[in-house]
Length: 141
Ligand SMILES: Cc1cc2nc3c(=O)[nH]c(=O)nc-3n(C[C@H](O)[C@H](O)[C@H](O)COP(=O)(O)O)c2cc1C
Image 1: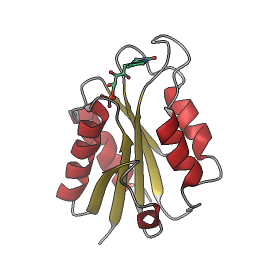
Image 2: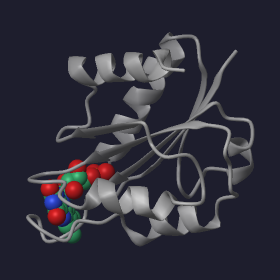
Image 3: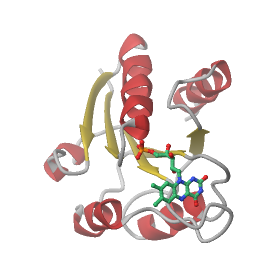
Image 4: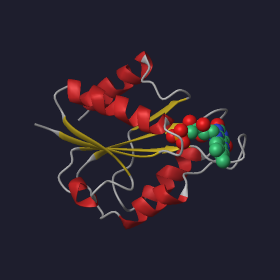
């Protein structure tokens, strides 16, 4: 059985909901999935993960300078280097994600594999398009 770890950082709950919906989708597809906030995630669980899905809410000046917040960056800084999992990113936002996903990608350089999928949502609910994108992500080799 494949294993997925979904780790999120949420300020007011929307990204937590998105992470939980991503996790529920993976579970439905037969993947042993754990979902945890950056504060609750044991980095050791990443060692044997086949999929790593990292999410963070978008903070910035609404139209410019979006970036993941410090607790998310600290989690990535402190996590052990792992080249095993296939990686996806997700974020929630209000107006524009701008530099959010590029900043998340940059933070991951040298820590894990280049993300193959990026999801974003305003309401934290998995859309049909998100589900299709996740299906393609899981189907790739
Ligand atoms: C201080 C602050 C800065 C924000 N900056 C942006 C931004 O630059 N762009 C944007 O689209 N949304 C921005 N937002 C909106 C949040 O990204 C959005 O509400 C998100 O879904 C919150 O996720 P959470 O409930 O998981 O914390 C900002 C919100 C706050 C509180």
